[in-house]
Length: 333
Ligand code: UT7
Image 1 (tube, rainbow, N blue to C red):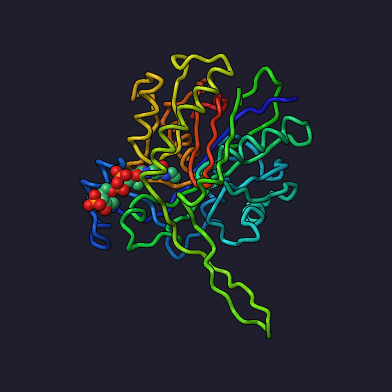
Image 2: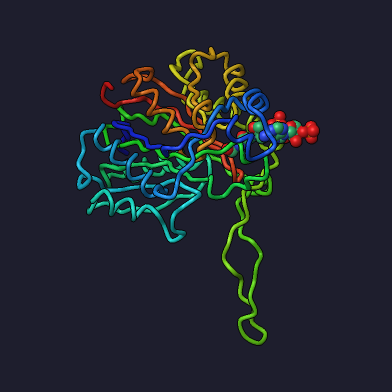
């Protein structure tokens, strides 16, 4: 079994930033509530000339450039998203836009766990020796799917895309030192973006369902309790399984949903808050994009350096959650 090196990253966010203050003109909320309960200060919202495809393609191209690769070098493009431009798949659009003519491209849906699940999936292809170079993209445009009159959810989410370039390498040099993945569909109703139940009488005795999705619905308190219980548990299991002490970690790279969740996880492992990566203040929760978006920012500003060890965890709808122990292997910024 080969290893997988993380050798480049890139990101793209929409041009428009909406602050909490601005949002309070649209829905009954305020900056103080949003900041104190979530840590969010602003979020990016994709406009009419932007799309999941354009954001994901920009992020992917930036990751290719960072790794020093050409698009034709790619064997695989995995796009983690829950908000595709096309339910048949958005990854092939990205592949076409990049000109990655040799790559197979497909979507993977696991909500906010999607990026980590995709990274781990890519590692299986690279590990088996069947592929050498892949791009793993996390991208979401949940502003399409929020109810702008529901203050409990609309203030949380933003749009964005980010990508990581990964390459097969000798097992001893792997950047994926261990992982865990979990699902619990019995708690699915806690967080949904579900098919609506519209239907149409097609023929006598035959009724067909109509396509369409209801806006995001979330039981925030249940999801919060799930996160502060399961994320420390899966990380503890991963650290124990890989023989890693929390003190060895350079960074905690968690899904960006709520600053209080980040702080609670850090406290559980006695990781100083200065070692917890957070960009919630600028982007809110960009779902599948949060982890690579945060990684790209921290790589480019020099916080995450080659050889650094990161414990990462994604969690959210499904319910789904996962964790990975990563060693950054990309170039200096
Ligand atoms: O990415 C997937 C993973 N997602 C998560 O991990 C999210 C987990 N959940 C959370 O982060 C938190 O539960 C929220 C941030 C969503 C909510 O925070 P909370 O402390 O659990 O608030 P709450 O839902 O218990 O609401 C408390 C109060 C309510 O008022 P009453 O009923 O006590 O009078 C809400 O109506 O806050 C009110 N409220 C708001 N007030 C102003 C809820 N949303 C807002 C708002 N602005 N935007």
